[in-house]
Amino acid sequence: MISTEIVLANRAASLYHACVASLSESIRKAIRDCGMTRYVIAKRTGVSQGVLSRFMNGQNALTLTTVDKLVEELGLELIVRGKRGKGR
Image (cartoon, rainbow, N blue to C red):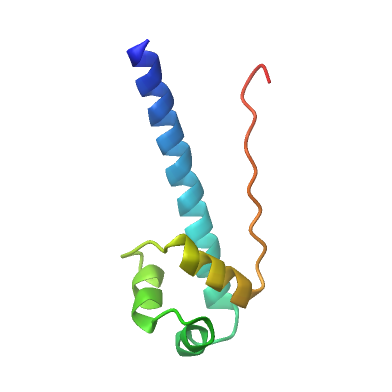
């Protein structure tokens, strides 16, 4: 039973990391394509330029609070969907 729990935990962790990577890349693309400078985005969202710069360079992740601010400012829609496994 323990080995099954470990496999499920590893799958969940892998799915989480894939979702975060996809979300991060989508936000990076939106920032690059929005026509605003990072300075303007920082001023309008209250997110520091340093946080934006480190995120854009792949050095740091964003908090959910920061993601919410950026999603709203950039006019994005965040949709959370679960994938159904076999037999569901």
